[in-house]
Length: 365
Image 1 (cartoon, rainbow, N blue to C red):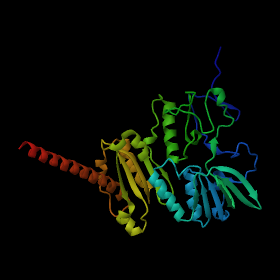
Image 2: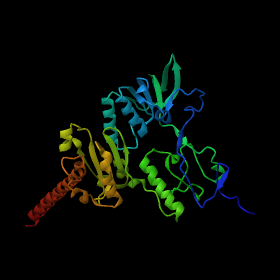
Image 3: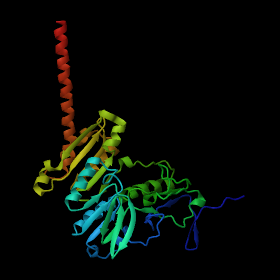
């Protein structure tokens, strides 16, 4: 018997191909609480982008979510003179980022007047006397408007994925490292996979999936080599492993160096002194991770990403002298700090060696 033909139906047409790519994105959940039949008393990200004038939103806003969009919106609205409350379920802001950077960014947001409630899972919404209330953990929080940014599901309604053998959960479509779904002729990329919604990562996935779909599927995703940025002020940028992840592989042999933005001439000139650059270096002197919280960090992280992708030793960056005064000085200055630390450790070892040899000479002569 003949197997049914795989095709995509649209506008009364059946489109056939050797391979297919699903890039339909995600949509906000229709109800936050599975057991609740509450009316929608909150806004979602699409609702925000459809606003003609963000300044017309009410004065007191509560944002629920711990993803990058939540943090960016919180700071943006705060700078529009709105009173902002940020509620997250996790123990700290941006739990997948470097801990030191996460804490510094939280301190920066709180210094700007944003209230942040951690470990506060949303339990219930209520609307009382034209005021909206959120019960989150042990708190009952009042606001003029509530914005939910983190509850999204893959936009796969009516695609009939189950019938063609594509597995999908509420978090996203299941794929392998080649971005093939459980049906190897069908690929997926972008928000439909779940996780952070970052444009450059979406483009990276789309490019790789297209090459695998059009030619022999041999390319595999490597998110470790791809930089990403959260557009707060200052920017938060990273590439590679966090310190905690790297220590699981290298333990005490790991080298971590940090240089503060305040030490740059550009910082002293501009008055923007908040932030630092943190590098995680392997025992073989290769860069494992780079983390920046700094002005223009989005423009600076590319140098570190290039070093990781090409497996350059950190000496290559340390020997690069960027123009001064510019923010890019933080790149080579942090690498040079690693050189200084390495030289200091080498001197300590040399001193111990000299002392050992002196003692042995006293014993035998």
